[in-house]
Length: 402
Image 1 (cartoon, rainbow, N blue to C red):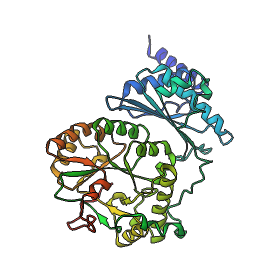
Image 2 (image 1 turned 180 degrees about the horizontal axis):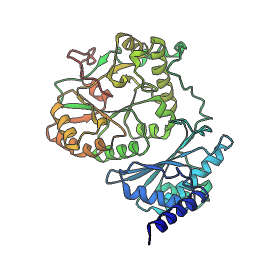
Image 3 (image 1 turned 90 degrees about the vertical axis):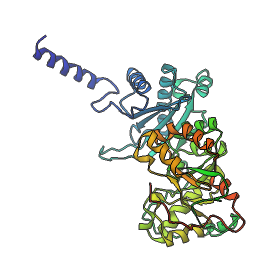
């Protein structure tokens, strides 16, 4: 076959694909390639159903026990109703869980319609999660477009009613937060370790909750029999409330990591207060728990930020071990760093949404246990401190981390 015929056939195929319903030139979604077999099967299945044109991202990963995938898609247009959006997501769920038997759970994310097509990021306006067990039950009673309708783990942004603060807002702190300090068993302070006499470490995770990885992390921690503290952002709690609820339901501790994850020390005191207070509000509304602890994004702190945190009844918690896992070091390097830095009463900083962190947890936990360490939450770590001495900073603080 000559070069001319090959080029002609390629152009013809490209034209036919571009003209197919639901498929256009940029319809091939981005894939994370963490579990390529599942991602490839998912992409092919959605394409065969003619519903790939709105898909912007596919991802899948596993902890060896559960396999979870995520599909991100765009709102069709500003006239599409929440019911229509949910129906489209239902077709995705039906296709994925029918055609990919190794998939245990699917996370769905809907992005706001952008008529200009120029936005680099679009707000999340819909999210849902459905397990294979839920799907097997619901698919026997509902059509594909309706399979998500009775699901509990569905969120749509418009009816939420919780305020989403702007980082530049100068609105004063609501009065209702001024008495939060009285709920703490000790005066708020700055903390970065517990009792050095106790062979206990607090295990903490920043930045979540996230699709795929919160579910896998919770499953991994359950298998290990370990409880942890999750420093979550208000924005992610609002986007994925069912994931924040799952953290609390599993017996873990939730804490404040700001609303938008900004550089807080670059903001005014009023803006700092807005970030922290709004996160307190959304966490309490979604989970029923009001956080007692706060960790500043990037590890950046100032006297003003400490005062704001204290005024909200929040103790500022730093760390003695970890950090830097978001930069994707090798698993062995991250494990070696954690084991080298672990000491009694320490606080370990890791991040949600980092595949490598998830993979080294079992081995690292086992190695720490062999050294006599117990992993627990920040609250449980501080419970061992003598009364009136809630882990005040006495040593140089660790390097800044995200």
